[in-house]
Length: 196
DNA sequence: TGGCAGATTTTA
DNA sequence: AAAATCTGCCAA
Image 1: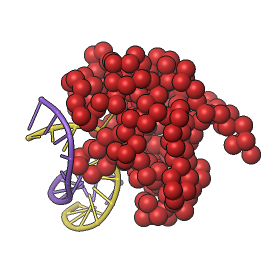
Image 2: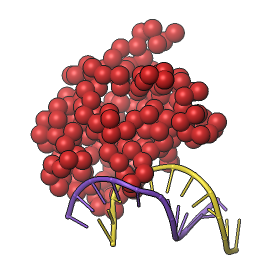
Image 3: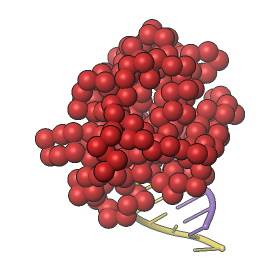
Image 4: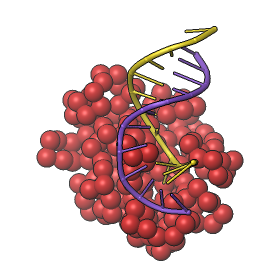
């Protein structure tokens, strides 16, 4: 239905200032097409990681093998392994070489429920993608997707016409430095957000 | 319901 | 040793 009018987000979307991309990604649809099939969800929670005065940003300590994708052009995927167990999916934003990004923290499942429940080993829709590690499991995102061009790959972001009316701004989760910065954004009242 | 340990890679 | 996490187990 509305998917008929779904449009892939263009390069120019990602080239906006990072905070605009972060808020703009709320309500957009993330789809991953694999050999097993396709799974998709609507983005309901994100966090911004900035170039200036943000020691929590992985790029702030320079380029390494892990975070190299962050220094690529806006619209690149940055996927890293956290705590030796889970993956986190980011969209690279800002000026190429500076290393800003938006962490996608939660999705409202839209399609590919069978795939997602199998990958997540749960039938609870609320548990499928309501966290950064969970959504990577549900969509089968891992280091193989690191560095992909999100405007030209099986991992796509699209606008299906859905609009978000109320965005809550909060502090980021799971960090101990720059923990007071208001760089987390989520859809008010959405049950798939990782935390209120 | 809330707190904590465990899993395990990357980096400092 | 701590990290942009999640889960299961334990005690109240």
